[in-house]
Image (cartoon, rainbow, N blue to C red; front, top):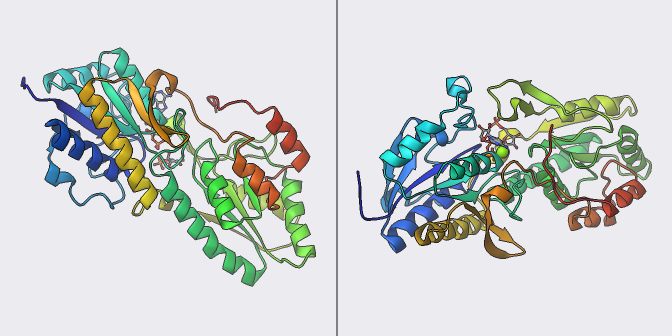
Length: 379
Ligand SMILES: Nc1ncnc2c1ncn2[C@@H]1O[C@H](COP(=O)(O)OP(=O)(O)OP(=O)(O)O)[C@@H](O)[C@H]1O
Ligand SMILES: O=P(O)(O)OC[C@H]1O[C@](O)(CO)[C@@H](O)[C@@H]1O
Ligand SMILES: [Mg+2]
């Protein structure tokens, strides 16, 4: 169906998060209002591209979704066209190319996380013109300081830990709160510092059980008869393994992390008589209305993606670096994970206010001085 006007497909890949709808609204409104483009929305991420399950997106379709969590298009984290799980892991990228050409698309906007950007990069090599928009509560995409959804997840986790605080205090307990984030500890670090937790355990710093137990004991001795621990789902004890909730080809990465809070509780019980309770925040962190920050970030990144598509700059992801907006080539992002660097200023500030990161401060300072830039993690 040839057409003179710009035709752009848009999809939302990977796990959902607050602010995706705000980005979708920005992309669609900007393309239709400023560039007179036609916008087509694929349903359920790349699944919709493979199955050609697509709907036109008009201005009115994205009116009123700025504040709404989730994604009106639906998402899938099992629809990698190069390893298409609904068809036993087959390579169905040729089907993606057929859809792209049959619909006569000029470009595709992919709103997603690291997995989506890796797929986008491979499709770029096949001739698809793609612009990525970074979203994920995990904040683990390289090339951008912030991803849409992270700020809201941190707010939700902070609010939850604040609530845990009062019951911990009343019952003189050790309370362990488990956050999401896969192999990076951004949510635990930010929510932990924001809520003043006593211990923050990150995937980037393998913890020592004895050090965590010492913090609880020292607090009790000094009259503070409760301790709050924020633990990222990807955290593990020194020389220990990741705690995996489920394994299977149907899961992203073949591994679904989860359960470290209960493992840690059992480890601490070997050292403490104190009552210990655990809370897994889980998918609650992915829900709710986006914060003002996530709404403005999504709107800025979404409109910039539309502008890039209109001027023909593709093969990039829009990004924010040092408070300035920019774009990064997809080949610099694909297959990488942005972990928390040990010299992150928030770790230093946490240490300054007496927060433990589960290891001796001297060990941490030593490691920070040798810390390398973020690199891909092979679990
Ligand atoms: N390095 C990679 N290269 C190619 N495909 C990948 C890679 N990492 C993940 N994928 C695939 O990308 C798809 C989406 O990945 P994932 O579920 O991680 O979503 P995402 O876009 O990264 O968003 P989020 O991490 O926020 O959920 C999955 O099908 C996954 O198998
Ligand atoms: O949607 P699922 O398969 O439960 O995935 C959960 C994972 O997705 C995320 O919510 C976002 O990547 C991670 O923090 C978490 O480990
Ligand atoms: Mg991912």
